[in-house]
Length: 182
Image (cartoon, rainbow, N blue to C red; front, side, top):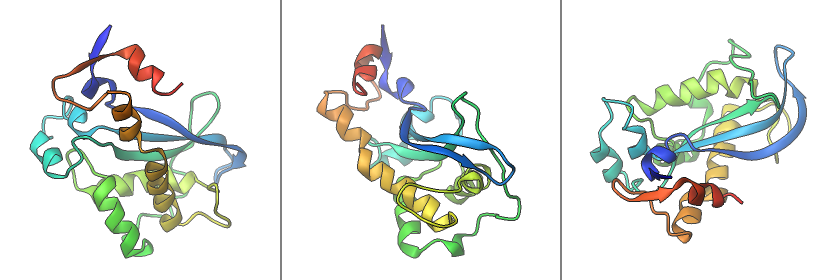
């Protein structure tokens, strides 16, 4: 079976790191994170307000943008909206991290800040510990960790090295995409 890479990679999800069971604000536990990336032009397949020319101009046409970093239960469910007192506040994020977010955490059809706010309120407020950090997870730590994972994994380089270049027209066997993660 062949599929368009833009469709196959629409909501590609990577399990970026597994941590031991953690308590979250409302008593739920999670034992891993889902690190979700997507190929912007592929996302436009499902959103009419999305314009591929925007992606082309951002030099992300051959790369992936961050969707989010989500605490996850082993049964596939996840905690969400864990602390309503911790609203998104861009003033709690360094200028350097905000600049990186503007380059690598792009929304498909809305203001980037709306996406970041959604991800923080829904998932970030449930994140109680990140690998390599200590103490409470701040907005700076949450977004910086997500950006660092993108840099570490460089999904586009993995696919391109296998001859699987994101494209509006090329097709690839689904098995080839799956084999990239073996």
